[in-house]
Image (cartoon, rainbow, N blue to C red; front, top):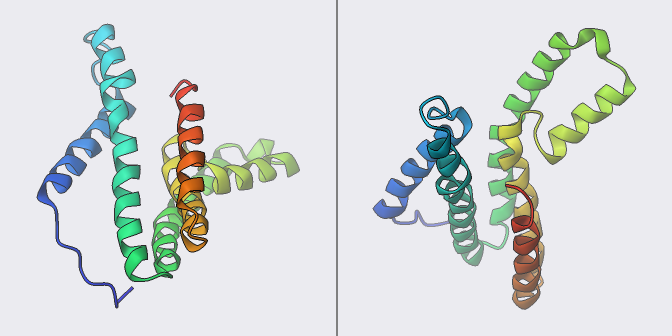
Length: 166
């Protein structure tokens, strides 16, 4: 990672990242629900839906730019994500164990581990595991120089995702 040149900052991207961060916060807190349910619906289900895809696109762009420079960049990139993700996961698992201590059994432990790996024990942590898995997925295709297949599968997954409710 040290061998990678520092990329020039794109101020427009940085400004839009801040805007999108606020959009994510608004989407999770829904501050307009009491004021106007139509406004809340429009913001939450239409306008705010640009924020998370934007973060994935920006992450993918910078990831690919760095992969072109260093073919093993993904290792440090995933490590950074895991370092940000794991402490929060552990905290939420511990809090959940304390809160549900009377209901702990083998299935409960299995479900906690499953959610920690594949989606986050709290709904807003899914982005980290999705970013880790998508990075591994994309890296596989980049290393095999299979861009056509990557695009076809990505379009299929996009369509599949658009058929869902979020």
